[in-house]
Every structure is written in structure tokens, then in C-alpha cells.
Image (cartoon, rainbow, N blue to C red; front, side):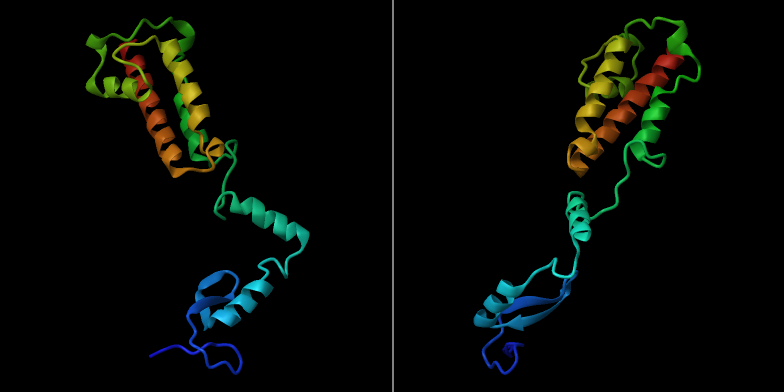
Length: 172
């Protein structure tokens, strides 16, 4: 069965989809080539929006129209991780000068965590902290257009740092 063009009094075959509503791509009508050209020429997605609504739409489009929270938002996952990671509840880092991590003191998890941060086997704690801060800035989703790839990588980096911090506190 062939679909007839949905334009008034047209009997051509409708092969081209034209949306019925702006924000619902599931509802459409089929038009012939001549009428889809007319439809497309007259289509204006922003026709019933004022300048402010258009500006908000364009800003929202940068994040694929998904709600976002600023890094400083109290519910932000990365802020919570960051605060927990940098929290020094035992005052360990204030009262001592941690020695180098040595291969003999490190578990397999610690070695994997060091590798995630870009170290091979041993590193000074201050170098680990510096590298962590650099990586957080580099891979934060706000700096990478909300890329899920970088978001997952940042989670992995933060978890690796947390693992090393826990191990560091245990060796104290």
C-alpha cells in the first residue's frame, strides 16, 4: 500500500516525513517531493518563541537539553567526590611528610590506582596530589562539553585517588 501525500487535494505518493509538532518526531505526515519542499521552505522552529526563549533554547542545546548543575552545586557528584577526596579527617597531611610510596607497600589496587593517574609503581604523595588536580581540571565534563567518556574517566581518576589516599592513611 502506498501512502498518498497528506497535502490538501494532492494525489502524489507521500515519501517524505514532515513533523506535525515541533518537539515530537514520532508524529509526522507524509508529503510528496513538491510539497515537502514547500513545507521545508516555510518551516521555522522558532516562529512562536521570543528572543529570550530562543537564547535559552540555544544555551540548553549545548548540553543536549539535559539539566546540568554547576560544579559548585551541593548536589554535584564531582563536588561530593572532590570534597571527600580532599577531606583530611585524621590531619595526616598536616602533621607529617609522607614518604614515597614503595612497590613493596602497595597492594595491587594501589598499583592500579597509580597507573590510572599515570604513575608506574611509586610516586611521592605531593606528586600524586598535583597530578590528581591536573587531571580533574583536564577531564571535568564542563571543560569537555559534558562528554560521557570524560565523565567516566574522571570518576575512575577520582576513585583511584581515593584508593591511594586510604592506603596512605593506613600506612601512617
